[in-house]
Structures are given as C-alpha cells and as structure tokens.
Length: 344
Ligand code: DP6
Figure (cartoon, rainbow, N blue to C red):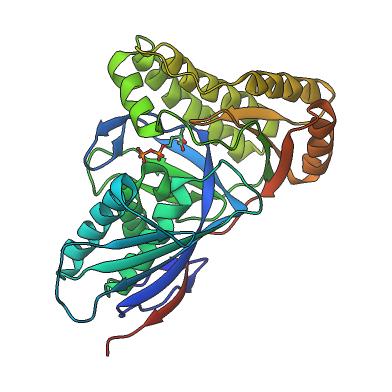
C-alpha cells in the first residue's frame, strides 16, 4: 500500500535514501503512562493538534554496500549525536530493518526548522519524520495507519504527527490496535505558545511518566477521568464548542501534572513563570476571549484558542507577561515525503 497524505500518494518509496518532514503536535487530551514500555502502548487514548511551523525534516540513507558494522550515525542540526539519542533512533531503525528484511547501517540527519528557540524540541515531529523517511528508504510502502504504528515505536506522541490538524490516538492493547487517526474538526483552532524557559529539562518525560505510573496515588484516578475527558472533548469538537473543549483540555493537563507532583520523588516542571503564565491566561479568558492553558513535560504554557482570536490572545498575553516570548500557531500538515532515490 502507498502512504497517503490528504488523499495524495506520498511516494512509492523503493529507495535507499529518503527525506521526510513532520510537524510537532500538542496534546489536548494527554498521553501519560504506558501499559507496555517496549511497544509503547499507552494507558489511555489521547487527542492532539498538529501545529504549523514547528517542523522536523529528516533524511535517512541506508548503506548500499550491504556491509553491516552495527553502527548507525545520527546528526541533529548538523552536530553528531551518540548515546541515548542514537540508541533511540537505532531502535526504530531496527524495527524498520526487521520489517524490510534488510541489514544495513544508516546515516540519519535531522533538521529542526523551529521559528524560534523553542524549548519545545518535540519528539513527536522527530520520530514521525524518521519513521516516514526510514520506511521509504527501506522500500516499505506503509499506509498511514502502519506509519502511525511505526512512529509510535520511536515516541508515543509521534504516532499523532503522521496527521495534519486533529488526531486521535487509540490506546489499543497491542501493536496492531494502537495507532492514531485524523479527526475532522469544525473549529479553526490555534495554539499560542508562552515560552517560560527554553532550557533542557532535568528529568526526561519518559522517566517522569514511569515514575507517575509507578508511585503516584492519583495515577489510576487520572486514567479514569482521562477516559471521560476524551469522550467529552470529542463531543465538544463535534458540536464546535470551543469553550467546552477548552475547559476539558485545561483540566486534563492539570490532572496529568497532579500525578507528577504526587510521584515519589515528585516531578515539578513548573517554574514561577509558568504560574504567572497560567494566571495571565485566566485573566485573558475573563476578559472575554477563548484562552485555555495546557502544559506538557516542561515549564512552557500552551494556550488553546481560535484562529480568529489568536492575534488578540497573543497581544494580551504579551502585555501581561513582559519579557516572555509569545507565538501563535495554526493547525499544521501531516507527515510528507520530500524525495526518494531508487535502488542502483
Ligand atoms: C506530556 O511521546 O515524548 O507530551 O512515548 O516515552 O517517547 P515517549 O513519550 P512522549 O510523551 C509525551 C507526553 C506529553 C503528552 C502528550 O503528548 O500526549
């Protein structure tokens, strides 16, 4: 089958080399906790919006000589990376090599075209672009669902970045049943990002997630309320009710952070600036605009609003939070293939 994006064939991908781009997504209803760590099967389904501008472009070349040294090479924004980053990339390449029945080293080069120093360096765009480029370079022709499952093996949230706009990741119970799909959304949503800090986090999200599952007394309650949140969020989307959606989104994110704060030892990503930003969002909303806050595994605050209101929300937040960078993003595209070179 041929991977499709917006109904168009991406490519028939029979080559050793391919380049693909994907955009980061922000979860409206969060994924936080795994049922299966190896396959990345989540404990709950999640809902996201893929954003314009926050883009990763990745090229993958498999060595044509067929000799295998067992060492892939990874370059991120032109600097070579080893250690954990390379291990995670090689683990996904191993899945691709298995699927394609091939045994070749790969060189991976990834560029993040973020319009500002975001501190949003998201694994969602990175692993969606890697899954698309690597599978095409290996000659696999995956449909969107298969590509979503493959991206999930690299980083859970990446399975949603296969799609433009809104995506729903069905938790499922095994590799075949855990994938994302596109959801039609009658709302023209936008996300305003408030940059509280661009610094790298001290506790990786994978570790924070594990600790929340294993040690927070609130974790099971959060999973239960998450199922209800998702149902209500999908209902609000269907009705085109942004205020109802926003209230659920905000509460779902706070619930996720409650499981982190009650983990042992606790995980606290919030900085004083995060609290200031959350208060500013409340004030903007009390001023009559749609503005609902959500936070991920870091101190930055993302604000759900509509495209129509985004410029005003951005303006009001800048005024309330001098010294913070504030940027709006509309919905962005799904994964797309750039080039493929065929077998020699
Ligand atoms: C808070 O997808 O980065 O952003 O599967 O371990 O790679 P791994 O985790 P990752 O976690 C994302 C967590 C989140 C919420 C979300 O995107 O749903």
